[in-house]
Image (cartoon, rainbow over all chains, first blue to last red; front, side, top):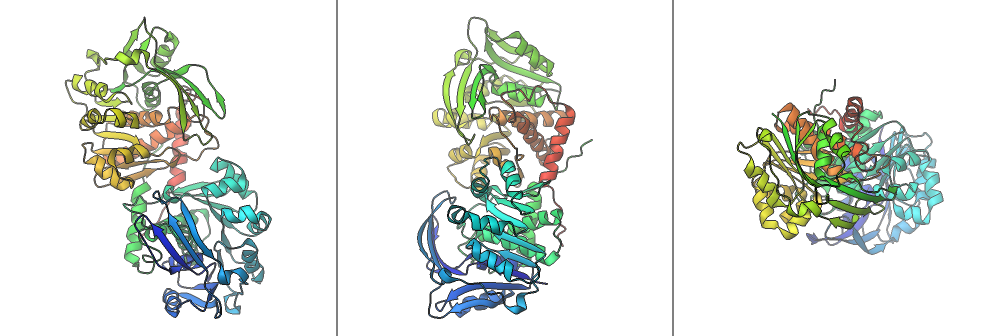
Amino acid sequence: MSLLVVGTVAFDAIETPFGKTDKILGGAATYISLAASYYTKNINLVSVVGGDFPNENIALLNKHSVNTDGLQILKDQKTFFWAGRYHNDMNSRDTITTELNVLETFNPIVPEAYQDCEFLMLGNLVPKVQQQVITQLRKRPKLIVLDTMNFWMDIALNDLLETIKMVDVLTVNDSEARQLSGEYSLVKAAQKILSMGPKYLIIKKGEHGALLFNKEQVFFAPALPLEDVFDPTGAGDSFAGGFIGYLAETKDISFDNMKRAIIFGSATASFCVEKFGTENLVNLSQEQVDERVQEFVDLVQFDIALV
Amino acid sequence: MSLLVVGTVAFDAIETPFGKTDKILGGAATYISLAASYYTKNINLVSVVGGDFPNENIALLNKHSVNTDGLQILKDQKTFFWAGRYHNDMNSRDTITTELNVLETFNPIVPEAYQDCEFLMLGNLVPKVQQQVITQLRKRPKLIVLDTMNFWMDIALNDLLETIKMVDVLTVNDSEARQLSGEYSLVKAAQKILSMGPKYLIIKKGEHGALLFNKEQVFFAPALPLEDVFDPTGAGDSFAGGFIGYLAETKDISFDNMKRAIIFGSATASFCVEKFGTENLVNLSQEQVDERVQEFVDLVQFDIALV
């Protein structure tokens, strides 16, 4: 009866046209867990950090209903570190530094107490490592969601294809969907990717919203038009976290409920990009979330009575 | 009690990755009028062509409820001609030929019988010429919609700004909205442009949908995810035609009805791009239009009950 989140917990140093940060808390699993915490209260984390990871970050996760028993702390090593600089359009970025550190040898171990997980969210990681988590679970979760990126399509495609086969929902961005399928049309790309195994595909288009496909249906959720985007870091992970958090809480994996989950995911991502790093995600109120979701309703709802 | 459409009627030669055409019927006013004809039956056209313009094209417009008494035919001159080639992504194109011909000296004359127009759609043209049409009308229409493009922002900005002040709805694409306002954020761009005069702004984002703004509200309509886009020519004009046609027929210019009009506009544009030129727009049935609009409903509607 819980959500298991697997992915990186990291330090990020971010530079955007609006400013820059020193090493701050980051990582896919961090954003996913924090985002999910606004929708569900039983979140279990599997990840790895080094001895340099501050206890206050762990306390912060715990405060957000995240159980960190599965967070390995390798005292003599250092936490994964990424530094990047966003261009003016905020859609492209340069990686300045990637220090894998503890991630180089990451061997995920699912604690016994996590074995009953019903929802599994695999954040972007080496596909083989994602696979190891699935095979460790004695009972298959009700829903497995996998996020990945172009990097693994370039250097570990076969592993990735094998892993994709094992999951229910795959999330990628539009250029990744095109790369994985070899199709430019996202409709054709989606059908090809769905034939690779997953029952659902989410194509994230950043400021242009997100598409949810299964073999028969398609749903589109816009991104909220924002006055300012300060930092896109973690937007995709916050989206995934809101999505899986809502599903884990409602326990309804119908297409109709996935639509709602995507709106909650989009709302959570919209908060994320309004401030640097996790700054906004650690301080939201239920009222803010509800108001934001209402903005999505107002943004897209119309009534047309067809005869 | 009618819709007045002003804009180019032209020949286009189009090349896309899917094929190429000889000189075919084109022009902003052509696409706008044909698109509008699926929603309203009283369409008056003001434009200009040369002696080379075939009678069958005029008959085609007449068949689609378009009154062509305001279509000047300059027998000794040639029709406006544009040739272009789309790149693989279909989002960018090169102009190969632009022969202004009759357009060089176009002096729009609104026939007496058109004076009672309630809805005025000004397709992309020299801003001064668009202005001449407005000033010729003795009674201001209930709604004036103006389409324009970056070209006029580059070479006739002051004329354009003067013209924009006179209209109710401005339609531009996202990069034009950024150019006109000097703001990258579309939310900020919209507020700045609305302060220039128009009460409503539509920002067209091509395959990423369209946004409707007034000073207090924002509405987003997606583009329909299509298997194939064969030819983007006329997409923006078909969108505008469906939009104004629906408004002209329903005579309701509330924000809620504009939302509906945008969905009808988007549906019409989605047909346009599925075939070359006007091929699809001249052969639609009411059933096809209704089915397409239902696809938009299915694409974006969700129900979330907020407490």
